Length: 251
Ligand SMILES: NC(=O)c1ccc[n+]([C@@H]2O[C@H](COP(=O)([O-])OP(=O)(O)OC[C@H]3O[C@@H](n4cnc5c(N)ncnc54)[C@H](O)[C@@H]3O)[C@@H](O)[C@H]2O)c1
Image 1 (cartoon, rainbow, N blue to C red):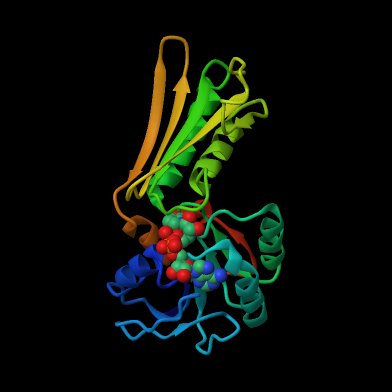
Image 2 (image 1 turned 180 degrees about the horizontal axis):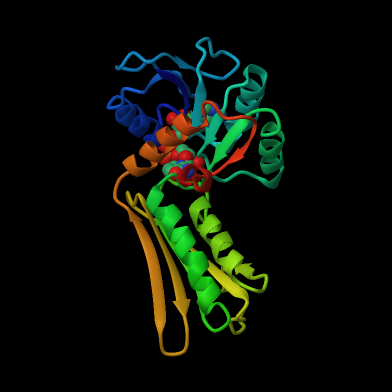
């Protein structure tokens, strides 16, 4: 049985993963790491940091915060434990650290662990290839009022999918108030809505002359990310060092 170390175990996603993992026979949550090292009713041991982690695992799943990245990667590299990285909002320096760690240990990376968003991404690339010369592209995302980063990591990765389908390099525009100029066709507008308990909405608008195509994904519960992350952990456990993505798992 695969033993999973869950970083961010007390969070919204951490709890969703514990619940989904309890339904599976192929893996178990062996321990959690969380800044809040409160004990859990389910008895899973929790450690305040990777430096204090006293339980070994076959794979780490991380839904925590970018502030925990360095200590987690140190542990992963030192113990050769593969990591499923689901946290979003990393700085460019942290992106470099992740790429460096992937030289010695297997790292699975996806800003969105749901299968639906990964299919949406492929549809967005196709639509951009077919429409990109004539239609303007805007991406709108909505999340709950406690989300820290904006726009979402998923919105950024959808924009990259659109970019792959275009034959020009777009400029990302995050606000228009200060610009006071007409929209250039080579822009992609990025918009973030925050409020209430919205789990995650993503919409890609292709606006042409007198016609609009909108493709969208709506997450109705966090379970879709939990299922994807646990599948990614099972996929990654026996992999060599390197960077892996949802596309690798779906192949
Ligand atoms: N890739 C995906 O599919 C996906 C889906 C949902 C959320 N996310 C991302 O996952 C992350 C967590 O989301 P959430 O909604 O569960 O957040 P949350 O705030 O509910 O939970 C985060 C947990 O991490 C803990 N934590 C914070 N800093 C830490 C550190 N340095 N070391 C260890 N633990 C630490 C917190 O105490 C908390 O329990 C966010 O970055 C979010 O954007 C990714």
